[in-house]
Image (tube, rainbow, N blue to C red):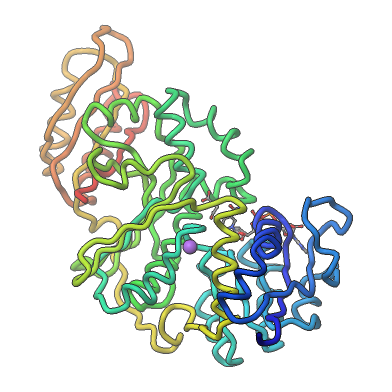
Length: 430
Ligand SMILES: NC(=O)C1=CN([C@@H]2O[C@H](COP(=O)(O)OP(=O)(O)OC[C@H]3O[C@@H](n4cnc5c(N)ncnc54)[C@H](O)[C@@H]3O)[C@@H](O)[C@H]2O)C=CC1
Ligand SMILES: N[C@@H](CC=O)C(=O)O
Ligand code: NA
Protein backbone atom coordinates (compact mmCIF):
# COMPACT_ATOMS: atom_id res chain seq x y z
CA UNK A 1 0.00 0.00 0.00
CA UNK A 2 1.24 3.50 -0.86
CA UNK A 3 2.20 6.21 1.63
CA UNK A 4 -0.69 7.81 3.52
CA UNK A 5 -2.48 10.91 2.25
CA UNK A 6 -1.71 13.42 5.00
CA UNK A 7 -4.47 15.86 5.82
CA UNK A 8 -4.81 18.95 8.01
CA UNK A 9 -8.32 19.86 9.20
CA UNK A 10 -9.26 23.49 9.86
CA UNK A 11 -12.49 23.61 11.89
CA UNK A 12 -13.70 20.96 14.33
CA UNK A 13 -17.39 21.78 14.53
CA UNK A 14 -20.33 19.76 13.21
CA UNK A 15 -18.66 18.81 9.93
CA UNK A 16 -15.07 18.65 11.21
CA UNK A 17 -15.96 16.23 13.99
CA UNK A 18 -18.08 14.16 11.59
CA UNK A 19 -15.09 13.89 9.27
CA UNK A 20 -12.69 12.85 12.06
CA UNK A 21 -15.15 10.18 13.20
CA UNK A 22 -15.78 8.77 9.74
CA UNK A 23 -12.08 8.55 8.98
CA UNK A 24 -11.46 6.73 12.28
CA UNK A 25 -14.39 4.35 11.98
CA UNK A 26 -13.90 3.42 8.32
CA UNK A 27 -10.09 3.63 8.14
CA UNK A 28 -9.56 0.10 6.72
CA UNK A 29 -12.20 0.37 3.98
CA UNK A 30 -11.16 3.89 3.05
CA UNK A 31 -7.55 2.73 2.68
CA UNK A 32 -8.55 -0.36 0.71
CA UNK A 33 -10.74 1.62 -1.67
CA UNK A 34 -8.27 4.34 -2.52
CA UNK A 35 -5.08 2.33 -2.22
CA UNK A 36 -3.62 4.26 0.71
CA UNK A 37 -4.62 5.34 4.21
CA UNK A 38 -5.78 8.86 5.02
CA UNK A 39 -3.97 10.23 8.06
CA UNK A 40 -4.92 13.35 10.03
CA UNK A 41 -1.61 15.06 10.79
CA UNK A 42 -2.80 18.49 11.95
CA UNK A 43 -5.95 20.17 13.25
CA UNK A 44 -7.03 23.69 14.13
CA UNK A 45 -10.10 25.13 15.81
CA UNK A 46 -10.93 27.95 18.18
CA UNK A 47 -10.88 26.08 21.47
CA UNK A 48 -8.14 23.54 22.05
CA UNK A 49 -9.55 22.23 25.32
CA UNK A 50 -13.09 21.58 24.23
CA UNK A 51 -14.24 17.96 24.50
CA UNK A 52 -15.58 17.09 21.06
CA UNK A 53 -16.09 13.39 21.63
CA UNK A 54 -13.51 12.44 19.01
CA UNK A 55 -9.81 11.69 19.17
CA UNK A 56 -7.45 14.16 17.52
CA UNK A 57 -4.48 13.41 19.80
CA UNK A 58 -2.52 11.97 16.86
CA UNK A 59 -2.53 15.38 15.15
CA UNK A 60 -0.45 18.50 15.76
CA UNK A 61 -2.61 21.29 17.15
CA UNK A 62 -2.48 24.78 15.58
CA UNK A 63 -4.24 27.76 17.12
CA UNK A 64 -4.11 29.48 13.77
CA UNK A 65 -5.51 27.61 10.73
CA UNK A 66 -3.65 29.85 8.29
CA UNK A 67 -0.30 28.95 9.86
CA UNK A 68 -1.37 25.32 9.76
CA UNK A 69 -2.29 25.57 6.07
CA UNK A 70 1.11 27.07 5.35
CA UNK A 71 3.33 24.96 7.60
CA UNK A 72 1.82 21.59 8.46
CA UNK A 73 3.31 18.56 6.77
CA UNK A 74 0.10 17.84 4.88
CA UNK A 75 -0.89 17.01 1.29
CA UNK A 76 -4.42 18.35 1.72
CA UNK A 77 -6.00 21.09 3.84
CA UNK A 78 -9.66 20.50 4.70
CA UNK A 79 -11.39 23.83 5.33
CA UNK A 80 -14.44 23.38 7.59
CA UNK A 81 -14.61 26.78 9.24
CA UNK A 82 -17.12 28.62 7.06
CA UNK A 83 -17.63 32.19 5.87
CA UNK A 84 -16.94 33.77 2.51
CA UNK A 85 -13.98 35.84 3.68
CA UNK A 86 -11.60 36.20 6.60
CA UNK A 87 -9.95 33.17 8.06
CA UNK A 88 -11.59 30.56 5.81
CA UNK A 89 -10.46 32.29 2.64
CA UNK A 90 -7.01 33.00 4.06
CA UNK A 91 -6.67 29.33 5.02
CA UNK A 92 -7.59 28.15 1.54
CA UNK A 93 -5.26 30.65 -0.12
CA UNK A 94 -2.42 29.70 2.22
CA UNK A 95 -2.95 26.01 1.47
CA UNK A 96 -2.97 26.59 -2.29
CA UNK A 97 0.04 28.89 -2.01
CA UNK A 98 1.91 26.12 -0.21
CA UNK A 99 1.05 23.66 -2.97
CA UNK A 100 -1.54 21.66 -1.03
CA UNK A 101 -4.88 20.40 -2.32
CA UNK A 102 -7.99 21.81 -0.64
CA UNK A 103 -11.25 20.12 0.29
CA UNK A 104 -13.96 22.39 1.62
CA UNK A 105 -17.66 22.38 2.56
CA UNK A 106 -17.80 26.15 2.26
CA UNK A 107 -20.35 27.16 -0.37
CA UNK A 108 -20.33 30.82 0.69
CA UNK A 109 -16.62 31.08 -0.04
CA UNK A 110 -16.84 29.34 -3.41
CA UNK A 111 -19.98 31.16 -4.55
CA UNK A 112 -18.15 34.44 -4.17
CA UNK A 113 -14.50 33.62 -4.82
CA UNK A 114 -14.79 30.25 -6.58
CA UNK A 115 -13.35 31.17 -9.96
CA UNK A 116 -10.40 33.06 -8.49
CA UNK A 117 -9.66 30.19 -6.12
CA UNK A 118 -9.97 27.64 -8.94
CA UNK A 119 -7.51 29.70 -10.99
CA UNK A 120 -5.10 29.93 -8.06
CA UNK A 121 -5.32 26.17 -7.54
CA UNK A 122 -4.69 25.47 -11.22
CA UNK A 123 -1.67 27.78 -11.19
CA UNK A 124 -0.24 25.67 -8.37
CA UNK A 125 -1.31 22.36 -9.95
CA UNK A 126 -3.45 21.44 -6.95
CA UNK A 127 -7.14 20.56 -6.71
CA UNK A 128 -9.98 22.37 -4.98
CA UNK A 129 -12.83 19.97 -4.19
CA UNK A 130 -16.19 20.83 -2.61
CA UNK A 131 -18.72 18.01 -2.86
CA UNK A 132 -19.86 18.71 0.70
CA UNK A 133 -20.70 22.31 -0.18
CA UNK A 134 -23.66 21.45 -2.41
CA UNK A 135 -26.51 19.36 -1.02
CA UNK A 136 -24.30 17.78 1.66
CA UNK A 137 -24.17 14.03 1.26
CA UNK A 138 -25.72 13.95 -2.23
CA UNK A 139 -22.87 13.40 -4.72
CA UNK A 140 -24.28 15.93 -7.18
CA UNK A 141 -21.07 17.73 -8.10
CA UNK A 142 -19.53 14.44 -9.14
CA UNK A 143 -22.72 13.36 -10.91
CA UNK A 144 -22.82 16.56 -13.00
CA UNK A 145 -19.09 16.61 -13.68
CA UNK A 146 -18.76 12.94 -14.52
CA UNK A 147 -21.89 10.80 -14.75
CA UNK A 148 -23.93 13.35 -16.73
CA UNK A 149 -21.00 15.03 -18.50
CA UNK A 150 -22.19 14.03 -22.00
CA UNK A 151 -25.40 16.04 -21.77
CA UNK A 152 -26.34 19.57 -22.64
CA UNK A 153 -28.04 20.48 -19.38
CA UNK A 154 -31.28 22.42 -19.86
CA UNK A 155 -32.17 22.87 -16.23
CA UNK A 156 -30.94 21.90 -12.79
CA UNK A 157 -33.09 22.48 -9.76
CA UNK A 158 -33.57 21.24 -6.27
CA UNK A 159 -34.21 21.50 -2.60
CA UNK A 160 -30.78 22.65 -1.47
CA UNK A 161 -31.34 23.81 2.09
CA UNK A 162 -32.17 21.29 4.80
CA UNK A 163 -33.11 23.92 7.36
CA UNK A 164 -35.81 25.45 5.14
CA UNK A 165 -37.15 22.09 4.05
CA UNK A 166 -37.31 21.03 7.68
CA UNK A 167 -39.21 24.22 8.60
CA UNK A 168 -41.69 23.95 5.70
CA UNK A 169 -42.30 20.27 6.43
CA UNK A 170 -42.87 20.91 10.16
CA UNK A 171 -45.22 23.82 9.36
CA UNK A 172 -47.22 21.54 7.06
CA UNK A 173 -47.38 18.69 9.54
CA UNK A 174 -48.20 20.69 12.65
CA UNK A 175 -49.92 23.86 11.38
CA UNK A 176 -47.40 25.95 13.33
CA UNK A 177 -46.08 29.16 11.87
CA UNK A 178 -42.56 29.96 10.65
CA UNK A 179 -41.26 31.67 13.79
CA UNK A 180 -42.37 28.73 16.00
CA UNK A 181 -40.44 26.16 13.99
CA UNK A 182 -37.29 28.20 13.25
CA UNK A 183 -35.68 27.79 16.70
CA UNK A 184 -36.24 24.05 16.59
CA UNK A 185 -34.47 23.78 13.24
CA UNK A 186 -31.52 25.79 14.54
CA UNK A 187 -30.98 23.34 17.40
CA UNK A 188 -30.46 20.44 15.04
CA UNK A 189 -27.00 21.55 13.83
CA UNK A 190 -28.10 22.14 10.21
CA UNK A 191 -28.37 25.92 10.30
CA UNK A 192 -25.67 28.28 9.06
CA UNK A 193 -23.82 30.48 11.59
CA UNK A 194 -26.07 33.32 10.39
CA UNK A 195 -29.55 31.73 10.15
CA UNK A 196 -30.75 34.38 7.71
CA UNK A 197 -28.49 32.66 5.16
CA UNK A 198 -30.82 29.68 5.41
CA UNK A 199 -34.26 31.29 5.66
CA UNK A 200 -33.64 34.14 3.21
CA UNK A 201 -32.51 31.77 0.47
CA UNK A 202 -28.86 32.89 0.46
CA UNK A 203 -27.44 29.45 1.26
CA UNK A 204 -29.57 27.95 -1.51
CA UNK A 205 -28.31 30.74 -3.77
CA UNK A 206 -24.69 29.90 -2.99
CA UNK A 207 -25.24 26.23 -3.82
CA UNK A 208 -27.25 27.01 -6.94
CA UNK A 209 -24.49 29.28 -8.27
CA UNK A 210 -22.01 26.38 -7.93
CA UNK A 211 -24.38 23.89 -9.57
CA UNK A 212 -25.06 26.29 -12.44
CA UNK A 213 -21.35 26.74 -13.06
CA UNK A 214 -20.72 23.01 -13.38
CA UNK A 215 -23.97 22.34 -15.27
CA UNK A 216 -23.61 25.12 -17.84
CA UNK A 217 -19.80 25.47 -17.95
CA UNK A 218 -19.93 29.16 -17.05
CA UNK A 219 -18.14 31.12 -14.32
CA UNK A 220 -19.85 31.07 -10.93
CA UNK A 221 -22.24 34.05 -11.00
CA UNK A 222 -23.72 34.42 -7.53
CA UNK A 223 -24.47 38.10 -8.23
CA UNK A 224 -27.01 37.05 -10.86
CA UNK A 225 -29.00 34.75 -8.55
CA UNK A 226 -32.47 36.03 -7.68
CA UNK A 227 -33.16 35.12 -4.03
CA UNK A 228 -36.28 35.10 -1.93
CA UNK A 229 -36.67 33.14 1.29
CA UNK A 230 -39.46 31.52 3.28
CA UNK A 231 -40.20 34.12 5.96
CA UNK A 232 -43.51 35.18 4.40
CA UNK A 233 -44.91 31.67 4.02
CA UNK A 234 -47.65 30.97 6.55
CA UNK A 235 -49.30 27.76 7.67
CA UNK A 236 -52.36 29.09 5.84
CA UNK A 237 -50.45 29.11 2.51
CA UNK A 238 -49.38 25.53 3.10
CA UNK A 239 -53.01 24.52 3.69
CA UNK A 240 -54.21 26.37 0.57
CA UNK A 241 -51.42 24.76 -1.43
CA UNK A 242 -52.59 21.30 -0.29
CA UNK A 243 -56.14 22.12 -1.40
CA UNK A 244 -54.89 23.19 -4.81
CA UNK A 245 -52.84 19.99 -5.19
CA UNK A 246 -49.40 21.44 -4.43
CA UNK A 247 -46.60 21.36 -1.85
CA UNK A 248 -44.52 24.42 -1.05
CA UNK A 249 -40.76 23.92 -1.35
CA UNK A 250 -37.88 26.39 -1.36
CA UNK A 251 -36.18 25.57 -4.66
CA UNK A 252 -33.09 26.74 -6.42
CA UNK A 253 -33.59 26.61 -10.20
CA UNK A 254 -30.97 27.31 -12.88
CA UNK A 255 -32.29 27.08 -16.42
CA UNK A 256 -31.62 27.99 -19.99
CA UNK A 257 -34.12 30.57 -21.24
CA UNK A 258 -34.38 32.65 -24.40
CA UNK A 259 -32.94 35.55 -22.38
CA UNK A 260 -29.94 33.63 -21.00
CA UNK A 261 -29.33 31.49 -17.93
CA UNK A 262 -31.84 32.30 -15.20
CA UNK A 263 -30.84 31.43 -11.62
CA UNK A 264 -33.68 31.81 -9.15
CA UNK A 265 -34.28 30.84 -5.52
CA UNK A 266 -37.76 31.21 -4.04
CA UNK A 267 -40.61 29.23 -2.53
CA UNK A 268 -42.35 27.21 -5.24
CA UNK A 269 -45.59 25.30 -5.49
CA UNK A 270 -44.89 21.87 -6.98
CA UNK A 271 -47.57 19.34 -7.90
CA UNK A 272 -48.09 16.76 -5.18
CA UNK A 273 -47.48 13.98 -7.71
CA UNK A 274 -43.91 15.01 -8.50
CA UNK A 275 -41.16 13.08 -6.67
CA UNK A 276 -39.58 16.30 -5.39
CA UNK A 277 -42.82 17.25 -3.62
CA UNK A 278 -42.37 14.19 -1.37
CA UNK A 279 -38.85 15.16 -0.24
CA UNK A 280 -39.41 16.20 3.36
CA UNK A 281 -37.57 17.21 6.51
CA UNK A 282 -33.86 17.85 6.28
CA UNK A 283 -33.64 15.89 3.02
CA UNK A 284 -32.44 17.60 -0.15
CA UNK A 285 -33.00 16.58 -3.76
CA UNK A 286 -31.47 17.71 -7.02
CA UNK A 287 -32.99 17.17 -10.46
CA UNK A 288 -30.92 17.48 -13.62
CA UNK A 289 -32.64 17.74 -16.99
CA UNK A 290 -30.30 17.00 -19.87
CA UNK A 291 -30.86 16.48 -23.58
CA UNK A 292 -29.87 12.80 -23.61
CA UNK A 293 -30.53 11.66 -20.04
CA UNK A 294 -33.92 13.43 -19.90
CA UNK A 295 -34.43 13.71 -16.15
CA UNK A 296 -32.34 12.37 -13.28
CA UNK A 297 -33.00 13.00 -9.58
CA UNK A 298 -30.79 12.41 -6.56
CA UNK A 299 -32.19 12.61 -3.03
CA UNK A 300 -30.44 12.50 0.32
CA UNK A 301 -29.48 14.31 3.48
CA UNK A 302 -28.20 17.77 2.67
CA UNK A 303 -26.88 18.70 6.10
CA UNK A 304 -25.65 17.29 9.39
CA UNK A 305 -22.36 15.79 10.54
CA UNK A 306 -22.64 12.35 8.93
CA UNK A 307 -23.86 13.21 5.43
CA UNK A 308 -21.53 16.18 5.07
CA UNK A 309 -18.55 14.16 6.31
CA UNK A 310 -19.48 11.48 3.77
CA UNK A 311 -18.95 14.04 0.99
CA UNK A 312 -15.74 15.46 2.49
CA UNK A 313 -14.25 11.98 2.73
CA UNK A 314 -15.31 11.10 -0.83
CA UNK A 315 -13.32 14.12 -2.05
CA UNK A 316 -10.34 13.06 0.07
CA UNK A 317 -10.52 9.55 -1.34
CA UNK A 318 -10.51 10.92 -4.90
CA UNK A 319 -7.36 12.88 -4.08
CA UNK A 320 -5.78 9.86 -2.40
CA UNK A 321 -6.47 7.79 -5.50
CA UNK A 322 -5.12 10.51 -7.83
CA UNK A 323 -8.55 11.35 -9.25
CA UNK A 324 -8.49 15.14 -9.12
CA UNK A 325 -10.74 17.13 -11.47
CA UNK A 326 -11.01 20.80 -12.44
CA UNK A 327 -13.05 22.65 -9.82
CA UNK A 328 -15.99 23.52 -12.04
CA UNK A 329 -15.65 20.65 -14.50
CA UNK A 330 -13.34 22.46 -16.95
CA UNK A 331 -10.27 24.63 -16.27
CA UNK A 332 -11.28 28.09 -15.04
CA UNK A 333 -10.17 29.82 -18.25
CA UNK A 334 -12.46 27.58 -20.32
CA UNK A 335 -15.60 28.56 -18.40
CA UNK A 336 -17.63 30.61 -20.87
CA UNK A 337 -19.59 33.63 -19.66
CA UNK A 338 -23.08 33.61 -21.16
CA UNK A 339 -25.89 36.16 -20.67
CA UNK A 340 -27.76 36.05 -17.37
CA UNK A 341 -31.55 36.42 -17.46
CA UNK A 342 -33.40 38.39 -14.78
CA UNK A 343 -36.39 37.19 -12.79
CA UNK A 344 -38.68 39.68 -14.57
CA UNK A 345 -38.36 37.54 -17.69
CA UNK A 346 -39.53 34.40 -15.90
CA UNK A 347 -42.74 32.98 -17.35
CA UNK A 348 -44.94 30.88 -15.10
CA UNK A 349 -48.18 30.54 -13.17
CA UNK A 350 -48.66 32.19 -9.79
CA UNK A 351 -50.45 31.69 -6.49
CA UNK A 352 -51.40 34.94 -4.75
CA UNK A 353 -52.86 35.30 -1.25
CA UNK A 354 -54.34 38.61 -0.20
CA UNK A 355 -55.66 39.63 3.18
CA UNK A 356 -58.68 41.81 2.42
CA UNK A 357 -61.43 43.56 4.32
CA UNK A 358 -64.58 41.70 3.37
CA UNK A 359 -66.74 44.35 1.67
CA UNK A 360 -68.54 44.80 -1.65
CA UNK A 361 -66.51 45.89 -4.66
CA UNK A 362 -63.15 44.41 -3.66
CA UNK A 363 -63.22 41.65 -6.28
CA UNK A 364 -64.14 44.20 -8.94
CA UNK A 365 -61.09 46.31 -8.01
CA UNK A 366 -58.86 43.24 -8.16
CA UNK A 367 -60.28 42.27 -11.56
CA UNK A 368 -59.60 45.77 -12.89
CA UNK A 369 -55.98 45.64 -11.73
CA UNK A 370 -55.53 42.29 -13.46
CA UNK A 371 -57.13 43.51 -16.68
CA UNK A 372 -54.91 46.60 -16.77
CA UNK A 373 -51.77 44.49 -16.24
CA UNK A 374 -52.94 41.97 -18.87
CA UNK A 375 -52.85 39.11 -16.38
CA UNK A 376 -55.36 36.31 -16.68
CA UNK A 377 -56.80 34.80 -13.50
CA UNK A 378 -57.32 31.04 -13.38
CA UNK A 379 -59.20 30.77 -10.08
CA UNK A 380 -60.18 32.81 -7.05
CA UNK A 381 -61.52 31.74 -3.69
CA UNK A 382 -62.43 33.52 -0.51
CA UNK A 383 -62.51 31.67 2.78
CA UNK A 384 -65.07 32.85 5.29
CA UNK A 385 -67.65 35.58 4.95
CA UNK A 386 -67.34 38.10 7.69
CA UNK A 387 -68.49 41.54 6.56
CA UNK A 388 -66.03 44.19 7.72
CA UNK A 389 -63.46 41.62 8.90
CA UNK A 390 -60.16 40.62 7.25
CA UNK A 391 -60.32 37.37 5.29
CA UNK A 392 -57.88 35.57 2.99
CA UNK A 393 -58.51 35.63 -0.74
CA UNK A 394 -56.49 33.22 -2.85
CA UNK A 395 -56.04 33.55 -6.61
CA UNK A 396 -54.05 31.69 -9.19
CA UNK A 397 -52.82 33.36 -12.38
CA UNK A 398 -52.41 31.60 -15.70
CA UNK A 399 -48.89 31.52 -17.12
CA UNK A 400 -47.69 35.05 -17.53
CA UNK A 401 -44.43 36.94 -17.66
CA UNK A 402 -43.27 37.90 -14.16
CA UNK A 403 -43.04 41.62 -14.94
CA UNK A 404 -46.80 41.64 -15.69
CA UNK A 405 -47.65 39.65 -12.56
CA UNK A 406 -45.67 42.15 -10.50
CA UNK A 407 -47.43 45.11 -12.12
CA UNK A 408 -50.76 43.55 -11.21
CA UNK A 409 -49.67 42.93 -7.62
CA UNK A 410 -48.41 46.47 -7.19
CA UNK A 411 -51.85 47.75 -8.27
CA UNK A 412 -53.66 45.26 -6.04
CA UNK A 413 -51.51 46.20 -3.03
CA UNK A 414 -52.74 49.78 -3.39
CA UNK A 415 -56.41 48.83 -3.05
CA UNK A 416 -57.62 50.16 0.33
CA UNK A 417 -59.26 46.90 1.34
CA UNK A 418 -56.02 44.94 0.83
CA UNK A 419 -54.43 45.22 4.24
CA UNK A 420 -51.12 43.32 3.85
CA UNK A 421 -48.60 43.09 1.02
CA UNK A 422 -49.76 40.21 -1.23
CA UNK A 423 -48.03 36.87 -0.71
CA UNK A 424 -47.02 35.55 -4.15
CA UNK A 425 -45.68 32.04 -4.75
CA UNK A 426 -44.58 30.83 -8.17
CA UNK A 427 -46.22 27.63 -9.41
CA UNK A 428 -43.77 25.36 -11.22
CA UNK A 429 -44.74 23.33 -14.27
CA UNK A 430 -42.17 20.56 -13.62
N1 LIG B 1 -23.48 21.88 9.45
C1 LIG B 1 -23.86 21.35 8.29
O1 LIG B 1 -24.78 20.54 8.23
C2 LIG B 1 -23.16 21.74 7.03
C3 LIG B 1 -22.16 22.70 7.01
N2 LIG B 1 -21.54 23.01 5.83
C4 LIG B 1 -20.47 23.98 5.81
O2 LIG B 1 -19.36 23.45 6.53
C5 LIG B 1 -18.63 24.47 7.15
C6 LIG B 1 -18.53 24.20 8.65
O3 LIG B 1 -19.83 24.16 9.17
P1 LIG B 1 -20.13 23.60 10.65
O4 LIG B 1 -19.27 22.43 10.92
O5 LIG B 1 -21.59 23.46 10.73
O6 LIG B 1 -19.67 24.85 11.52
P2 LIG B 1 -19.37 24.90 13.09
O7 LIG B 1 -19.67 26.28 13.53
O8 LIG B 1 -20.01 23.76 13.79
O9 LIG B 1 -17.79 24.67 13.14
C7 LIG B 1 -16.85 25.65 12.75
C8 LIG B 1 -15.49 25.31 13.30
O10 LIG B 1 -14.56 26.28 12.84
C9 LIG B 1 -13.78 26.71 13.95
N3 LIG B 1 -13.35 28.10 13.75
C10 LIG B 1 -14.14 29.19 13.56
N4 LIG B 1 -13.37 30.28 13.46
C11 LIG B 1 -12.10 29.87 13.60
C12 LIG B 1 -10.84 30.52 13.61
N5 LIG B 1 -10.75 31.84 13.44
N6 LIG B 1 -9.73 29.77 13.78
C13 LIG B 1 -9.81 28.44 13.95
N7 LIG B 1 -10.97 27.76 13.92
C14 LIG B 1 -12.08 28.47 13.77
C15 LIG B 1 -14.69 26.60 15.15
O11 LIG B 1 -13.91 26.53 16.33
C16 LIG B 1 -15.41 25.30 14.83
O12 LIG B 1 -14.63 24.22 15.26
C17 LIG B 1 -19.35 25.78 6.79
O13 LIG B 1 -18.77 26.31 5.62
C18 LIG B 1 -20.77 25.31 6.48
O14 LIG B 1 -21.46 26.17 5.61
C19 LIG B 1 -21.85 22.39 4.65
C20 LIG B 1 -22.81 21.43 4.62
C21 LIG B 1 -23.56 21.07 5.79
N1 LIG C 1 -27.47 25.24 6.49
C1 LIG C 1 -27.40 24.27 5.44
C2 LIG C 1 -26.34 23.28 5.78
C3 LIG C 1 -25.85 22.63 4.58
O1 LIG C 1 -25.36 23.18 3.63
C4 LIG C 1 -28.74 23.57 5.34
O2 LIG C 1 -29.61 23.79 6.18
O3 LIG C 1 -28.95 22.85 4.35
NA1 NA D 1 -22.86 17.08 -2.34
